[in-house]
Image 1: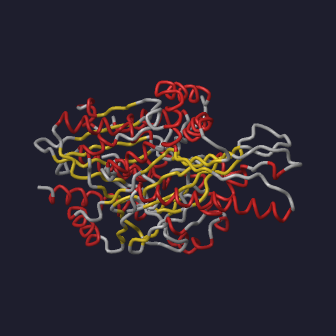
Image 2: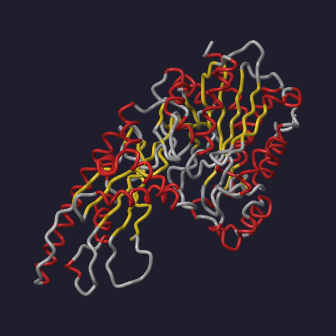
Amino acid sequence: MFWQTKPQLSDLLARLVSIPSITGTESEAIFPDLLALELKKLPYFQENAHHLNVHNSEDGSFLSAFVEKKGSKKTIVMISHFDVVGVDDYGQLKEFAFNMEKLTEFYHNDPGLLPDAFREEFQSGEWVFGRGSMDMKAGIVAQLSLLEKAAEGKIDGNLLFVTVSDEEVSSKGMLKAIDEILRLKEEHGLEYILCLNSEPSFKEHPHDTNKYMYTGTIGKMMPSFLCIGQETHVGEPFAGLNASLMAAALTMEFELNSNFAETIGEERTPALTNLMMRDLKAGYNVQTPTSAVVMYNLLYMEKKPEELANGILAVTKKAAGKIVDLYQSRAEEAGVHGLPFNIAVYTWDELYAKGVYSIGAEGAEQLIASALAAATGEDERGKTLRIVQEFSGFVDSRPCIVFYFSPPFYPAVSSRNSQFIQLLASFVKRENEAIIERGFFPGLCDLSYASASMSEQDARILAGNMPLYGQGYSIPFDSIKKLDMPVFNLGPYGADPHQKTERLELGFSFSTLPELLEKLVQQAFRLSK
C-alpha cells in the first residue's frame, strides 16, 4: 500500500505541492499526467488501464480514475481541484512557495512572522506550509488514500475520482468533466449516490480551531455595469457627465449593501463588495472619461437569482437618480447651467434586443464575433465587457448604465434538507463529535455544478443577461440536471488559503481524516441499499 500511513501521505503531499500548478500555467496543464503516473503504481490501474484517463483540453483539463466493485452499480463521485493561486504574495520567500520542507523550516525558525492568533495553535500541532498544501492538494491526497483502499477491494461500492483544473478562476475543468461523469454513468449503468468533495475546513474567525463538514456550497454571481457618460473638456466639467462619477455612485450604493446578505442559522454570506472599478480611457488626455466599468462579487445561499437580479436593477436605478440629483445640486452650487439629462438603465437583454432591432439577429451575432476577435488574449471579464461596449452604440440616449453579468457564475447548492445527507452528517458527528455541520461551504467550489439547483426561469435570466453565454462560456444545466447528485464536503484542516502563510495541520488531516472518509463512504453505501 502506497498512501495509507501518515508519513506516506505527507510524502505524497510534498510531491504534489512541488508541482507549481498555478491556474493557466504549463505546470497546471501537465499535473494530470504526473498524477496519472502516481496512480499507475496501483496494480488495479495496471490491470484496468481503461479506467484511468487524462483529459487535456484548452477548455479545461482533468483526470478521471474509476475503481469498480464487481456486482455493484452504487457509485460515489469524489471531486477535487489541482490548480492553485499565484505566489507573488510570498515576496522574498517566493522561490520556496512550493517547497514544503524549506518553507516549513523557515516558519518554524521564525514563528514571529505568523499571525498572532495562530501562535498557540502552532506550538501545539504539526503544521506544514506551502502553496496548495491546504487548498487543496491535501484533499487530493486523502481521496487517493481512499481510492487505493477501493482498488484493494476494501470499499463496498464503486469510487469515481475526478480532479480538475481551473477551479480558482472559472471552473473550466469541472464544467468539462461533467460530460465525462455523465458518460461513465450511462455507459456502466451506474447509480451516483453522492458527490464527495474534500475542500479544507475554513476558519470562521482568526481564533477558530473547529473542523467543519459542509452539506452544500455558496453561490456567486458578478453583477457588472458599463457606465456611459457625456464627454467634455476638464475646463467645462458641467458640460458633460464624468463616467467615473457614475461608477463611484454605483459603488456607494452597492458596496457592503446588507440588503443582499443572507443569514441561515449561524451562517451569513459575506457582504457584497467591489472587484473592479476603472474608467476605460486608453490613455491620458484632458477629456473626462466617457465610460467606466464596475464589477461586484455577490455571494448567496438560498435567494433565487431572479430575486437578486431584480434587487440589483432596483439599486442601479436608485443610483442613477442620485447621480442626477448630485450633478444638479453641484451645478447650482457652482452657479452654472448644467447639462439637462436623465440616466437610462438597460439590462443586457434589453440592449441586445436593441441591437437585433437595428441590424437583425445575424448582424448582432456578427457584431459579437467581431468584439470577441478584438478581445483576443483578454479574460472572460474583458471579453464580456468588449461585447457590451460594441452594443452600447444602440442605446437611445446617453448617459446610461448597462447592467449585465460577467462570468463565472456558481449556483448555490445545498443538500442540507436531504434525509440521506442528514443521516451521513449525523454519522460523522457520532464518529467525531468535534466536527461541526454547516450548510454552505464558504469558499467557491465545484460542488456548485454537481447538483441541480437552478429553475429554468433563473437559468434564462442568467443566460439572457450574460453577454458571453453561449459565446465561449456556458453552464451545462441539462447535464447537471441528469446528474443531480447529493453533495457533501469533508476535508483536511488548515488555515490561510491564498496567503503566504497557507498551512496544513497533519494530525487531523492525515491521521483522522482518511479513516473518517473511509467510514463515511462505507456508511453511504450501507444507507443506499
